[in-house]
Length: 358
Image (cartoon, rainbow, N blue to C red; front, top):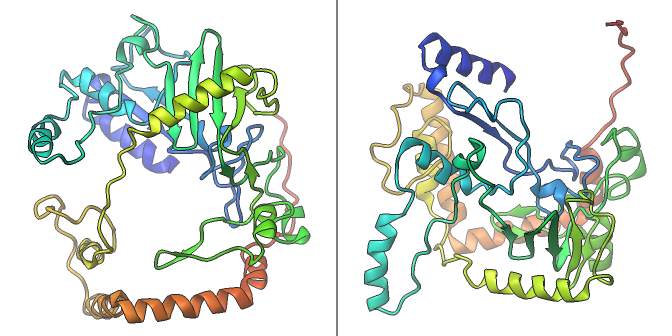
């Protein structure tokens, strides 16, 4: 990744484009702390697939000649959602971020009493990044189970329901104590393993599964934190601020009413076929006739492998074959999961590297 970013920046500079470029580099989420993931979000709690700060507080930076001098070298402490990049870039480019096609479609949908398409969620931060205004966001709807709300100097966060990976990792994690301790002791197990869409449980015992995945249940009422003063989420404020917790729980319920989660149909072979056509890279597959550059010609061996792959996918997409395959793997997984988790990780011998004073 470092080499690729360096090559990209170098190419922009070589072509005289760096001075007019706003270069944004951002993570999509916190790192995976589950086995076989190897990330560490210390000192934050949790990781990817959880609503704890270790899962949702991601790193990002801006660079390039288009970055306002007032912002260079400074930290931006405004609340920022991934949806805000789009609106921010639109303002910078002088474009309207509104989804005009969705607005037009809503006329048709309203006439048929169908659910309407929501407006764009993002807000532009360009004025705030340029030092011309305060940050525009006062809340972030993290998920159907979590909400961030700014109140003065405080940044309150409510987390509800069951959350996996609900612990803190050490400064060196994972380390050689994890494989030796066994699954779920020093490192949680992945909580959402699936085969052809069907979830494979970590354990037949729900209580054991919760322990192996480091699950914490905040219940419907929720756990409450001020992540401005307590970013590691050690101090649950639920008992101290019950009225605020109830207020934020109600606000989360209200925000969830606007969640856009339509039925998206069934799995389509077109996705697999498009991936094969693009040289083994998955991507959009609906109305993309002119969206992709031509792939390098496939060799005879590649064409043979691709044809065999598509035949296997077609066979497994038939409902009887798919159900039989899922049932087979569920049975196999139940018999081998303990041994399988242990094989996913191992500890390499420690290397005695020379230490050089600088």
